[in-house]
Amino acid sequence: QRLRYSAEVPILKDMGEEVLERVDFPPRLKGGRSRIVAIQAPLPLGLVLGQDDALPGLTTVDEVAEEGNGASAGVQVNDIVRAITATQTTMETPTWQLLAGGIGQPKTKRFMYSVDGRPLEEVLAAIGSNRMDPDGRDVWLVLERNDGDSD
Image (cartoon, rainbow, N blue to C red; front, side):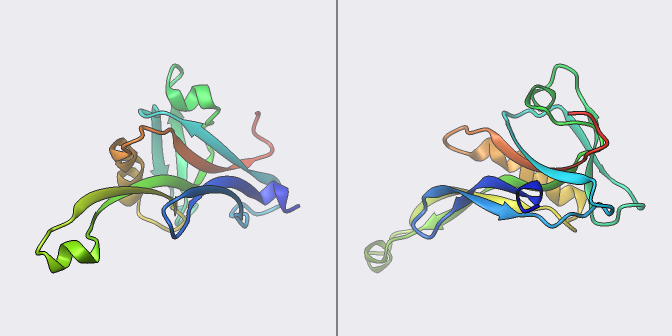
């Protein structure tokens, strides 16, 4: 049961390294007929995401472009987006630079971002932030898929 509702995803650790760890995602769909799927794909994903009043707080895949990177990676219409990678740029300043009056250097970190309950605009901005990844890595998407849907 745990494997059905969990996925191995990259987790940012304190020292800045990324480690694959298994993370649990309690099901949002009722009836026990769903499972968690982790997918990696390069930008642009070729997806149309949306939020429906019938599923408050959930971001769903409304359309998948046939030739898009999302389709090639296995994203399907009606998948629920549970988490994605996002990046954030911060100024990092070692103490010795602060003492010398320095301003620091920008550093971009990539991390897993839970989208449960987040506004659609925020989810879209988080996906787009992956363009700022200095290593150009694929976006990770954690999706909840209804088992009634085809693989």
